Structure formats: structure tokens, C-alpha cells
Length: 141
Ligand SMILES: [Zn+2]
Ligand SMILES: [Zn+2]
Image 1 (tube, rainbow, N blue to C red):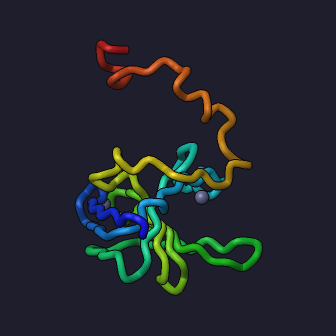
Image 2 (image 1 turned 30 degrees about the vertical axis):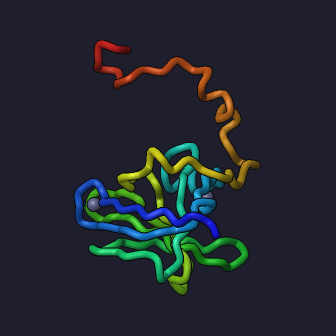
């Protein structure tokens, strides 16, 4: 049996709390163009929870994206602070929960990367760049 991992987190303003559990092999990084556009970032990492394994408190704003195929993906986010919290199936059976707002996110290394065809071409070389412990206004840069 695959190990179950339990996580919890809040959006930046605290209006939304999500907790739940998932199979340890269901940690994905998605490099699709939708993830890039919605997040403004090169990719999004998610854990996949089924309806029975997720608890959501607070009001989640939603935007439904309709693909050319007619498939719908419902994008959930906080309407106050903008934190992206999930994408879900229209029937609410499965939630792809974003890892960045989860307290345990540092231990949630993606097991699989999907939509590699649209990944940023520099992603594999990220360790080769210069890294600083803090931002541009700090003395460390
Ligand atoms: Zn919020
Ligand atoms: Zn994606």
C-alpha cells in the first residue's frame, strides 16, 4: 500500500483553510501553459486528493476554464488575497491542491513532472544559477 501523507494550509490572508491526505506518489509538478498563465510562474506543484480526503473551510472563488475539447477545469483561489488553492473536476471528485500554501510544502518534492513539452527550457539548469538567501534589497545580494 502506498504511504498516505496528511497536509494542511491556509491562504495568505487566512480566509481559506484546506487539509487532507493523498498517496505519496501523487505529488506532481505541472508545466502546462495553463499553469504558467494562472500562476504567473514557470510551473505549479500539486498533490492529488479525492473528494473524501479533503476538507475545505472558507469561501473559495472559482473560475472555470473550458478547453478546446470541451473539458472543464475549475480553478479555485482566494478572492481576497489571490492565493491559488486548487483545480478541481467539475463534479468535485478530484482536487489538485497547490502545494505552495501548505505548511508541509518543503517536503513535497514532486514525484512526476507532467506537460514537459511546455516546460521552461532552463528548468533543468536551475541549480547552475547564482542563488541568494534573501531578496534584492538585502545585503546578501
Ligand atoms: Zn486569502
Ligand atoms: Zn498544469
